[in-house]
Length: 317
Ligand SMILES: [Fe+2]
Ligand SMILES: [Fe+2]
Image 1 (cartoon, protein in one colour):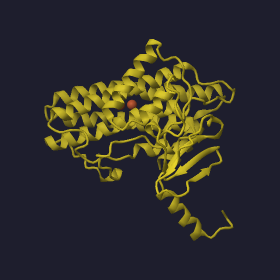
Image 2 (cartoon, protein in one colour):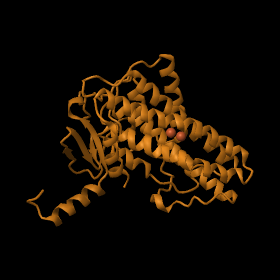
Image 3 (cartoon, helix red, strand yellow):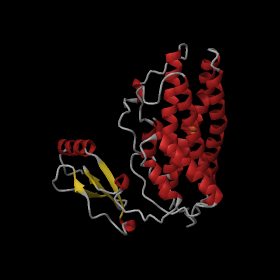
Image 4 (cartoon, helix red, strand yellow):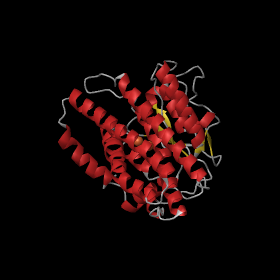
């Protein structure tokens, strides 16, 4: 863009950022593209073709289920189709129910194919949530009932994002190929279906506890900060594993003892039990991230220590 005026480029960037963009899909996968797109303002639809061969549509929609631009074959029963369906489900309780169903069917062999799908750029959320900047959330220190509810509410929000992050890594990287040409083994999908199931269980436990304490999920503001890491790493599986699962989930483990002590000091044993279940599961999630990060590096003959450091510094700074 060297030959354009900086002011013009900045103005165009502002317009692009202000628009509501939807990924229409990868050029090679558009076997049955939607012909029913309409623009929100009734004017022409703006389509952008990016270097990675995806098409993006601005301020437009289509009448298909969940606004997916590519019609889903109703007989399709792949884990990626379900992953995308769950990402497009705004109600967290429905997200949890679908996640459990898919986990059971994957484990029992009723779903056998991984398939391929194009996950949404941003998972759906219920309209009644008040979304604020990450730094604006008041978590408190657990010294009062209101403060404990706020802590649990904040954790429930994180778990809802964690459900989506698990399905996103499955759908977004289902067609990933190692430099050797090999696809990811089935155990990769086993691991992240299990992680998704755990995150759904965590959300459900926290929501139930918030209700027992007289509140409900959505009563307090939430933030969408966790999804920024998904966006930053949407084209790089190694970065996704490193940043989301080996850094963010590990950070969660680091602060866990302090969080647990806040509830224990108030005699809130029911919340302590919930947090202990979460802690035990989260250790396995960090392990899954590390397992697949090292698997890819070893298969591709990469020396992963120098690889991960600049990646983490860049993405988490
Ligand atoms: Fe979790
Ligand atoms: Fe987790």
